[in-house]
Image (cartoon, rainbow, N blue to C red):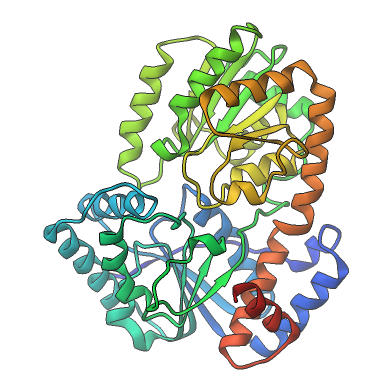
Length: 426
């Protein structure tokens, strides 16, 4: 068995020069120079569905263009493994659920099998999320530096599951989290670094799309483009609360009977629970013709997601738990009015009442949506302020800069960017 290698295509840093500041582009070039030719490996559980895959499809080719030999491999797993890793994911985000001895054995066995299939030697191995976290035990010699990149909310983890993973996480040379609050209070962790993820402003999902083109695309899915639309883009997952979105929309419809709702998601192969929650969402919609439940299985891809966000009167991300919530970043980048749960990294993206609305319940979600629909001009001005906030903080060139700074730090290259990164982590 060999680990699947993902073809990420080509991207050029020069294409981002008009979006990123000159100072940032100069930083990237300066940090990349001492890393020329270094080998970097990204390990993850899936090549599609979810924020990790979307980030990698941009980050990896930009690392390559910066002069690093970078590749991405996906680990192998059967349903029994992904059932366990989904349970781990939920427990790390707060679900009170222990792992059985059998589940622990399954996790360890698949990680060992994938480690044995790992070929090559690398200067930096980046392990994304819990699924491949134990590979380091059996493949330490494959990487000079191992980095664990956590993309989920670890603020209130179920302790039994966290403590099961900690020996492997602690074996890494560094760990990267979205927020300081996600760093577990345990002395056995490696050096922790804090930075948010980012979106690619030039990817099909985020590139400029005219209102006319967006309306044309949505018309193909049966949306009445003359009536207002509320959209949530997310996996079908209890933490994203699509059932709560439907409840909030029903409250809004009592005041705005013309409003439609779209729930747009993707079905990832490492999320077996997704089908169950998709079916629960369909059941909650109860056949209402104004609720559209769509996914990649309905040919909804990146451009279609872009169109749904661009055309929407309001975009919702009613998460109950959230690592960061890049769908919020995407909607703000498109200048769309945003309503989102007051959780996780979402609160780092929205200034409540100024660039969007943060909500804590179905009722407050409905209230915020009513404000947007009642006063679209005010909502539009808020959204444009949100777009500028994203421009300076949550676009891919900044993310690349952070990774290059960490690589330099691990290699002993002291620069101002490395010191800045260490200060943020401290």
